Image (cartoon, rainbow, N blue to C red; front, top):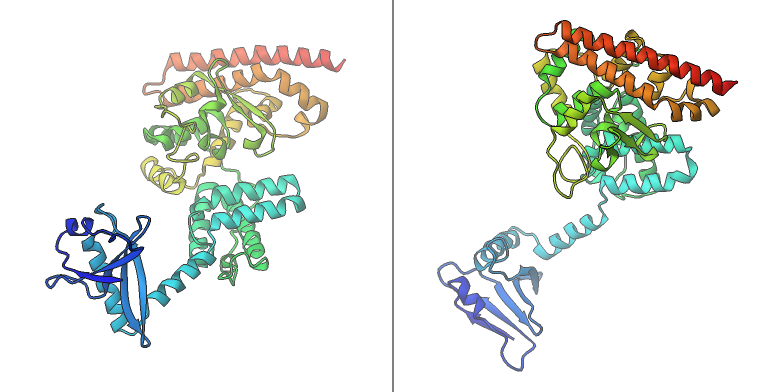
Length: 435
């Protein structure tokens, strides 16, 4: 059943009702001034009120459902429905079937998979077949380095996009990280193609990119002068505080960037990372120096949000842009955030901290932390780790002071003396344990 109505205002639409005893009616827009030919409001028993565009195609009448009638300016009001109907009429006049085009787009969308869906499916499928360390590394790359792709349709990612992101990764973390991230991405795309996870994906976009030249392990250690420039140029925002914490603690970028308030033990004044949050999958406690605590205390805590840094879900993002801005302001180039970790370790060596204590601070696993010795170190190095990080923080405070002088030098000397006393005590306890 159909009826013609002269619709001038939105209120005219609200007044249209389903006649008693009918299960459906279509009111066609017949306004002579701005009416849309073929536009109708279909009302059905049960309350359904939809705008529908009717047209003839191939000698038969067809219809295109525009959407639910609404009084919301952002919804399908009379004015918006008329505008859409006018667009559809242009399509018909130009030889295109609106309903068929809509079906094609919907069909394509239903077959499209996001990059994040591909990552989740790949990691789940490969878990039983990969070593835990390899699976953890792939997860770290795909969910970290390639997080910027998560909201994209997987088959729309091309070699240019991958190449641009690889350049950013290299600038942020170095050539080795770039190549490892590239390898993980290539393996994921190869699996996606082989499993026909996305029917539209035919080629691996990583194949069109190149590996970076690796000149052996990085040896970049920042000088005190460079540390001062970076510290003073660090902005008063999330990124600036992350940089300062990385400099003070010597931890990894991902560990600090994704830090949660639940991981900070204020009573013990330390960060407590679970094994799922560390590269070597071992729990790790990071004592906080007074300076590091001051950085964390300067952060405004957002109610009902665990992440210390970033916005929305997850931790900090936007690393590349922030790093470029910091480099331009500090006028220090050719360094990565990972270099702050190496610099802290080297600086603690220069201050007299013993190697096994530095390894404990960095959560490295080597000869000093293997087997029974590793268990013993984990339970006894807490004081030595705290002393080492406080000593290093005092050094940072001394060199970054506005007017460095005798007091700052004395502070470093005092911390060094305390560290020597703690090391002597530790050596004595370790000797007794071995006997």
